[in-house]
Image (cartoon, rainbow, N blue to C red; front, side, top):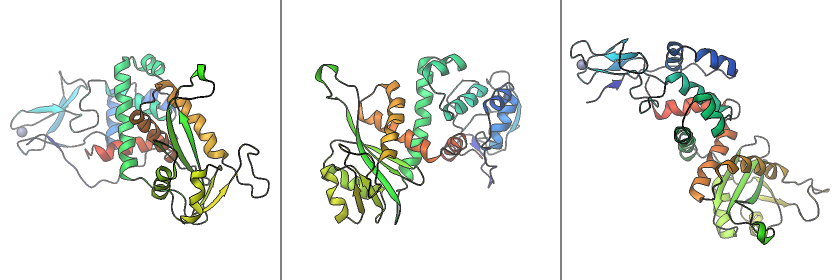
Length: 308
Ligand SMILES: [Zn+2]
């Protein structure tokens, strides 16, 4: 038996939506404040049980990096206050982790910025960004949430990600990505696809877009089958117009989304489909939780590393 955080039925306080960077900087000046904050929101254990079965007590520590430890009275065993948490494997001071979580949430996640403001090595930055992307991935995969529904409009489009080959005109090497965005909510789903055939795209549409949705697309032939597949389908001819003057059909929302995602992607410069897929999922996750990204990433961490 290992040390075990004592889990108790807890009603968590909602993570405030109005935190600003000044609040974070001030909080992060004091490690005790950060520890208390992380405990309040369920990211560090509030109680710990020793492997001998006795509840441990918290005391000052001369060798754990946070200045405190859990200690067992009868058997004198001790463990880190991070035990069982998302922060367990790391030696990075908690105030820096706390700042990192906030910066990432605010999309201040360029390598240059994080290396400068956290004093981290490039590898540390990559690792922790990956860990957070894994949290997003886990949630989206466990809870994919199809979009659309009767009377709702979803725009669909395909776009190629990757570097332009200058010596071959407009030819691109890279990876096709298929995107779907719901007009009202802005919820977006993007997945990498090997090609743009009906055989590839239709199963994805059926998996992620509710039946009876109104779908807007360009005139790509693969979409012709949609009106026979339980959807209401309108098209806009991009070579001539961008908004159909009669039906007012347009797909500007999904097309506008590509730019933002590609800009984020550009820094990674990857056309590795697996890596691209995880970047796309992070982009979808951010869109889903745009009202409180900091709150939702902490909730995601809390769900995967329950310590309270
Ligand atoms: Zn013990």
